[in-house]
Image (tube, rainbow, N blue to C red; front, side, top):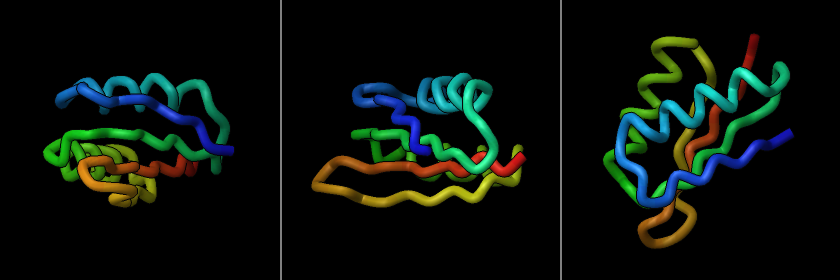
Length: 75
């Protein structure tokens, strides 16, 4: 199941904080999908969740100036 986190207008570390809160609420193999309009957030969010938790994470540009960062909770 996907769980959307709206992070439009947020700068780091706010997207990370929002995603960590959501990850605590969801089940294993569910996904958190962060929508962001800040390109600088994409690499830091991906790096954070891959390094700290080992979660599979990817970033997809969905339109001009909009990205989705997808985190799969694996534990």
